[in-house]
Amino acid sequence: MDNKNTSEKKQVTFAQGLVVLLCIVALIIYCARVGASSNMAMGLTWVIIYLFCVVCKFNYSEVQSAGFDAIRSTFGASMILLSVGMLVGSWISSGTIPTMIYYGLALINPKIMLLCALLITSLMSVFTGTSYGSAASAGIAMMGIGLSMGLPAGMLAGAILCGATFGDKISPLSDTTNVCPALCGGTLFAHIRSQLFTTGPAYIVCIIVFTILGSRYSGGGSDMSAITETMEACAANFVISPLCLLPMVFVIVLLVCKVDVIPAIMLSSVSGGVVSMLVQGNDFVSVIAHMWGGYALTSGNEIVDKLMNRGGITSMTGTVVLTLFAIGMGGMLEYMGVLHVLVRGILDKLSSPLRLVAATMLVSYLGGALTAAMTSANVITGKLMSPIYREKGLAPEVCSRTMEDTGTIGGVLMPWHSNSIYYAGVLGCAWAEFVPYCILSYTVPIFSLICAATGIGIFYINKEGQRISKEEWQKLYPQN
Image (cartoon, rainbow, N blue to C red; front, top):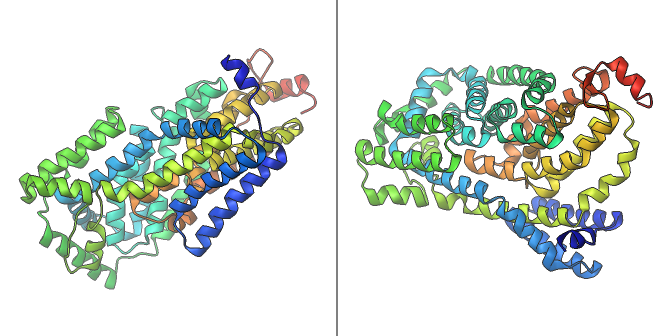
């Protein structure tokens, strides 16, 4: 019965899919231009989909159920966001963040701050396999230190995101790095090796760019005065001690030991609460209040007040609401077949590796834009494109690599995407501020296209799935 229902499920036509997509995009753009709430803009997309279903006679109950199913898959990400809010409130209360800022300002030269943010979050992601966890731990520390040095928030967040996504992309512990080759019928380490052809050069570009950008901040003159004042304000309002760093060390150990992200963050929050009571002298009720509603401080130093008046579960509720609306919208659009109908017409025209890779990138970006979720974009792209790679004689790791080059790291380029929403909430930086500095997300696709055009890093298989040379491939598939 289920198979019959699935086969008879109504799908949108090309014109219908284009209309509903353009209406949604127009609404989001208009709300952004006039400064209306992005949460409400995303919520109103559900009204557009409902009206579309009424006019085009779709079963809205089924469409809505698909949206609810998609939302269920995001409960984990929503819990991470709420847990991070609790973590930030706890870490400020315990003096963890003030101590990291104090020591960071004393040890790190502003000239290399951006490079340090890139490298430290890269290592963190490689060893833990999670860009979310890296941003929520090392990323928060780097933001605090860099902002105290006077570096722009967007620039700092960009360096952190480039490092976190790079490490997550090539780490054998990462979920996406394991899922993508599995979807395409490839192997994990062939997938990782294949990514080095596109991600490796792009990462070198990131190192060069953030080194050059960081060199503009010498730390001399007024900058040093501001740094000194920030350190003094931290020391005046918090006990600065290595003991305060224990919650951060604790969460890193838990993540390296592959403890699930949510309990790892919550346990670190609890450890921060313990340190807050033992070292900072706060009582239990105050610690709980900081975890729920955030920390409140009036130090007289504008930078310190900005850094410390934040956190708490309540600070993340708006972000969670936005995520739920966006993911639900994506689930409904996917159920109606909007993405499939929009790309179906180009599938027969993929006669070369360059065209196939470019089409895969397009599908991946559209999947991310419509579903607002990295995993959904990769699943959709894998389902649609991996059979074509096999048909054309291209190795599965070429497909899985291209999925990662766009679907995994492309979400931060879309303000409504769950990745952008998460990072903006965790790092306390607006999407418009950090998106110009997401260098990795811009350069990896460029190198992906270069590889496809030149044949560098493109691998071939015969009809039995065995690796062959390009010359053998051209004989078997002369139309390519």
